[in-house]
Image (cartoon, protein in one colour):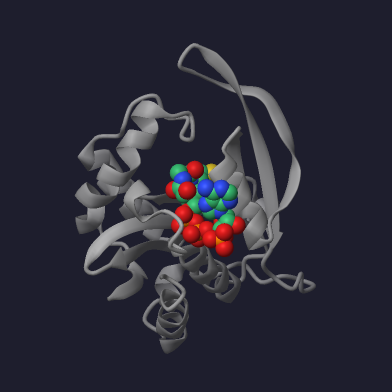
Length: 196
Ligand SMILES: CC(C)(COP(=O)(O)OP(=O)(O)OC[C@H]1O[C@@H](n2cnc3c(N)ncnc32)[C@H](O)[C@@H]1OP(=O)(O)O)[C@@H](O)C(=O)NCCC(=O)NCCS
């Protein structure tokens, strides 16, 4: 059975097992070493204070995850988030990233966010293809913005409008204020059915 749900700190070992190989073996993440279990657990808990962190499950197993984070710290950026997604390679191309991002988008819109951004270290055919298929538009490329594995790397930024740019905008609600509402359950249930 396929399911989308909010992460809990107890997901830490399985989600870290998905993330660590991307840190150790690729430049997809700009971390140089995987975080400790304790650090990753704290990261999940801290994110969930304001933002959705979602897990995609197939037959009870965490197959991937996606979460939102603050785009920039200054107050006028408060309606903008960055998105991240990591899927276990055994489950690629089963629409899990699409399901996770669809649910994230709707939850973030419900919270009152207006812009979602994603930074992709290039080349990354899978991630570029995925973000473009989801409707993200390229913004531009930060040239040689990261150094990892003895090389400089470029990051291509994408943006997606997720709000209606109301005037004046209300400060976004925290996900904690909304997550027990049936609207959240409906969003998670609706997009879990996209997973194949
Ligand atoms: C990028 C990633 C998240 C995509 O996850 P996924 O669950 O396999 O993606 P989906 O099955 O939802 O794919 C949706 C669409 O994205 C595009 N896409 C997915 N994989 C692709 C690939 N290998 N090449 C080109 N486009 C691809 C396609 O348009 C696809 O639609 P289709 O299946 O009808 O062809 C996954 O490959 C991944 O975890 N990669 C490593 C981590 C990473 O790069 N994360 C992003 C960091 S910026």
